[in-house]
Image 1 (cartoon, rainbow, N blue to C red):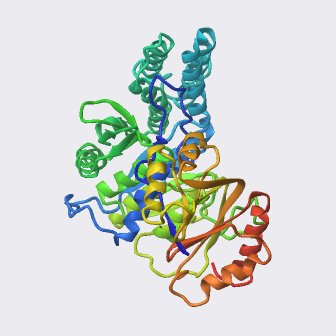
Image 2 (tube, rainbow, N blue to C red):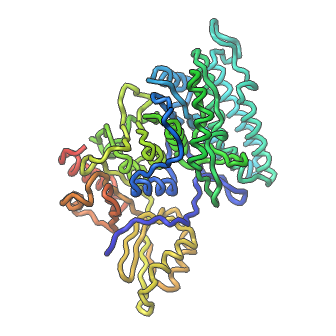
Image 3 (tube, one colour):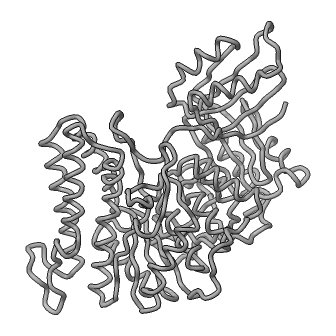
Amino acid sequence: MRFVRLLPESRSDPPRPRGTDRAFRPVLDADSVPDREHLETARSAAEQGLAGQGAVNLTDDVTDIRIHKFGGTSVADTERIRHATGLVLEGPGPGVVVVSAVAGTTDRLEGLWRMAREGSRAEWQAGLVELEALHLGLARELSGARANGGPLEGDPAPVDPESSGLREVVERIRASLERAAAGAGTDEDADLVAAAGEDLSVRLFATALRSRGAAAEVVDARDVVRTEVQGARAIPRDEETYRLARAALRPLVERGVVPVIQGYIGATAEGRTTTLGRGGSDFTAAIIGAALGAPEVTIWTDVEGIRSGDPRIVPHARLLPELGFEEAVELAYFGARVIHPAAAKHAAARHVSLRIRSSFRPEGEGTLIRADRREGPAVAAVVHRGGVALITVRSRPLFMAHGFLARVFGVLAGHAVPVDLVATSHTSTAFTIDRAEDLTGMQEELERFAEVTIRRELATVTVVGRGLLGRPGNAGAVFTALGEHAVHLISQASDVSLSFLVDEEKAHEVVRRVHRELIEKGGDG
């Protein structure tokens, strides 16, 4: 039996909310789980040996520039934003700042869009007033003004909501929601609402920097991150983005100005707002870092770095001081919610390191994801992802085996079912998908020529390290560590990861056992 991993190119679960014929789909803040499309893009870059993009001349870069990306929890309130500005101003070298929406804002916007589409006018209008009041209050506090608008002695005058651009953003949200309420909302309206959290937070961060005497300027990501729409996805156009980023950001840095730019947002050449999908702010930071030739991009979040296991499950999970980007891609894909794999891909292609650090405990060095790292522990980390279903498809005796797999995957492609792990034999195949997927149509079509069984309540456990294919005994040690636990499917398609499917109720126990046997006792890490 051959074991491979497959994600069909025809998957259709979009990385952002779109359209007027379905509800606003959740768009998570930049610290969130990334979408599969960008994950596969990242993985393919590893397999291609870090091929450079080639067209951008980086010989005259400001070599000590640092890119700082702040996730939603790092800009959650006045105290956190002020603290974040200190990390930028006190850090080494000139800085460029990429910010996510204030924590919780994306959920609010999602709710407003849903209420507008459902006709709950009073509710969405009240919610928008609350959202506006929250951000105006933060702006006044950050500019040194009292809540009632009076200036504090010796501090700058209260922020003007008109000149700061906050009110303009709110009115743009209102206009899109009005169109949605009237049944005339468009794809761009959905993206405009989804992007509004970053549009607001970028202005707050610039206000906070200015209140500390720093020169800061908001740079609209729509003028920097160029995308094209392919079906339901927005795909960054790397070379054009590099050129626009250098033209927009480098002159500011050279003048001592701190550029502050939204994460997650882009635009087409025609000026239509697009969004980059889950974890898109990491992506933005990596693209800008690559464009400017930055030696390092710092991802500031609420965790101290990447660990050898989820500390909520593994009591003795270790902080990993260094990691190769290939391992980082696999960890993110299979359960570690720390870094967007496409961010690792873009940074690695330009030989830019990524560092994951906690804005809550900045004294720690965090985890450095290096583009040039080639050696590491046999087992660095163990992660898991629940909510998995296993589909087994067996050819009926009267059907020839020839063309069977092609027919199966043709059905999957036709129904746009995203597949994670696959195991195949001569007359059968088994694959995993997210159990939340609607399988009715796919199952009916497969049953016209095959026997189909579906097993739910499963979880994927993935071991990530180095030499899992090439070093004798490594894979065997993993299976020995599993003990008596039942394994329903195995996949090993690269040298840095090995995945297997277990009962979901046993997943935490399996993760702890494998971590204990291979990392804690084995001494790796």
